[in-house]
Amino acid sequence: MSEKNINRRDFLKLAGAAAVVTSVAMTGCSNAETTEKVTGQKTTSQKEIPTDKMTYRINPKTGEKVSLLGYGFMRLPTINSRSARENGQEELDQETINKLTDYAIEHGLNIFDTSPNYCQGRSETAMGIALSRHPRDKYLISTKLSNFSPAQWSLEESVKIYKNSLKYLQTDYIDYLHLHFVGATATIDDQRLSGMETFNRRFIDNGLLDFLVKEREAGRIKNLGFSFHGDIDVFERLVDEHDKYHWDFVMIQMNYVDWKYAKKVNPMNTNAEYLYKRLTDKQIPVFVMEPILGGRLAKLPVHLEKMLRERIVENSIASWSFRWLGSHPNVLTILSGMTYMEHLQDNLSTFCPLQECSEDEFNLLQRVSDEFINFPLVPCTQCQYCMPCPYGVDIPTSFAHYNKCVNEGFISVSCQDKEFVENRKRFLIGYDRVVEKKRQAAHCIGCGECMPHCPQNIKIPEKLNDINDYIEKLRQEKL
Image (cartoon, rainbow, N blue to C red; front, side, top):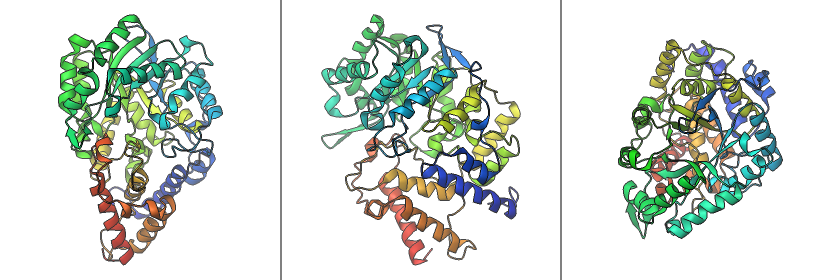
């Protein structure tokens, strides 16, 4: 860390706090009191949140109010009080999901987002159970046409996915239907298809998009759009075809780092600034995914967190990203996966009501972004699409532990570093705790089966090999 940014005493104080708080998050603990004891600061979940102050945006097509905060049903809680996104085999805690849903609706949140493949295919059912307990005019349903596998590319199989969504969600219509994962590549018969070829096979050649347009005309789909990942040529084509398909919304990955640095985070991505402006020029409302970059903008490196704490002490670090996003007028809703009540309360407090960023705060976040991008993090958002690995490697958790150590300053470049012994112990002991030995990076054989499924286009075997090399050098003290 640069001494001009933070002195050693402050660094050690913040690093200790960040280590414990991050440890709490990674082990699934959701106790707000623990966070306060560690940091000396109250979480926003302890504030009283008004039930009548939610910030809304107006859908220009329907005129309906859409809560600026949307509930993403990807990280639902399990009966073991963990996230189903990282612990997909565990049973969902439907009682807690119902309570979270009730609390969200009570505080004005009215849009809930899911997909047929979230939580090992159980998310839509859980959402249907939770929402059907409320009047249908109290909530908006957003789900996806997730026909990822080539075996699902026929019109018959794709339509079956759509009709199952209606059944599992216990509804006669879907408010917002996304063509899911548009721009991603696929592999069929050992042939790697481009993003454009994949899109054509999934939605055009089989007549599926024409079918969905007719469903919109019939009123069973109220708004039709797509979520974009990857191949910019596909994005450009669909935006240019707006006059033909009349997209009601488009979902993009957007946050204050991806605004200008998406390509530095991942060369296959496109800067959110460009995507947002293209959609705004076409008057297409924006759905936001990855508002805190897979959690990385909720756990900043300690000296960057200090920059934000010096400005506003009481707000969570994550709230800065949500406020920044909400300050963009063409954003219709910001989807956040919330596992615990503290997550939901913290986010609700940010949007009830939203305080938009000032010009000075925009500039501050740009400075944070400029420094953040220099950290050698793996751009993994913990989406789990790469899993399961056929050889048992826990890919997302291996990346998460590495990123955690980078964020907290526990990475050494040489055995001569002053903190080498302590950093070595923290990395190796921590890795053995969060990843079983038989599931660690060393067991990757480089088959590459995971890579076509990664929306960030990470060269996963290469990154796992780099992490394993670093681990072996730590163990042998040969850095």
